[in-house]
Amino acid sequence: MKKTTVLCMFGGKSTEYEVSLSSAHSILSNIDRNKYDVIMLGITRDGKWFHYNGDIDSIKDDTWHQKDVLPAMLIPDAGSKKLLINCGDPSGYAESADIDVVFPVMHGAHCEDGTLQGLLEICELPYVGPGCLSSAVAMDKVFTKLVLNNFDIPQAKFKFFTASQISSDPDTCISKAEAEFTYPIFVKPANAGSSIGTGKAANREALKTALINAAKYDSKIIIEEYITAKEIEVAVMGNDDIVISQCGEINPGSDYYDYDTKYKTNTSSAYIPANIPADTAKKVRELAGTIYKALDCKGMSRVDFFVCDDGRIVFNEINTLPGFTNISMYPKLFVSEGLTYSEIIDKLISLATASR
Image (tube, rainbow, N blue to C red):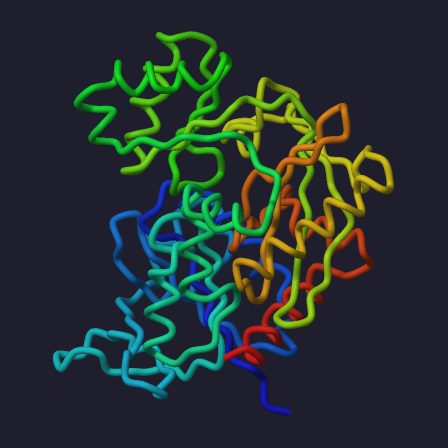
């Protein structure tokens, strides 16, 4: 039986470059090589594309681009489904590799915001994860909230400012925020993941600092009421028919679940199932399915919530290409449902080829 050829893409011009490398290492360590031929395509921090043919451990420690690489690019001709590889021939790209499906193991800007998905659509290549529109809307936290308001999804109160507003008149932005919220106030870039650029402000000076910092990462900044609650995450898989995992709970072990807590320290812990009442967990899972469908997601997404002490459920955000690192909740949640890591990968690839 002919193997399916999977193009695994990793890296990228994103603040979440390192997370992508860890996710890719996990995917490449667990994909069933008896069923799939794997081609690796890495993108450096400065946007250079390379076919990589080396050891996967070099991906995790970010030395992959130092050897065993050749410049490469996807052919945009509809239906060709090929990767062109420059082997040093004077005539240019001398070799090509056939591709059946793409697994973009990438996070953040230029990766899960619809731009990469648009390129893959032009190339007529099936790919894992939601399509262009779903990816773009879900990546932008403001647009996500505006869309989900039409589906009566409970959300935190929010406002947003542009980076230019913050740069030109931060005091007015702060005054508008203070008129609507009480401290502490949560600040984050509208288009970023892994909690990069987020901040919790307890006073006016801290709010100004947080706004200026968040504006380094995006042109639109969202501010929200700060909610003291348990952080609950749900994994969703499927196209028309979806499977929703049980609820998982994150205890950050710090003030909030920031980038360092997620990937650099050992303070956080995860509980599967989450320590919430059964009826609350059922409502969370139902909301996750509603949100997934409302945003027309395909393949997979992780949907995050807050569950307050009084039982109130508040949607936080959705991640359409969630992490696959050794600490990531998406694979952990489905492993807790009885799947192996390899089976999760297999199902996601099958969903990709079925939907496009």
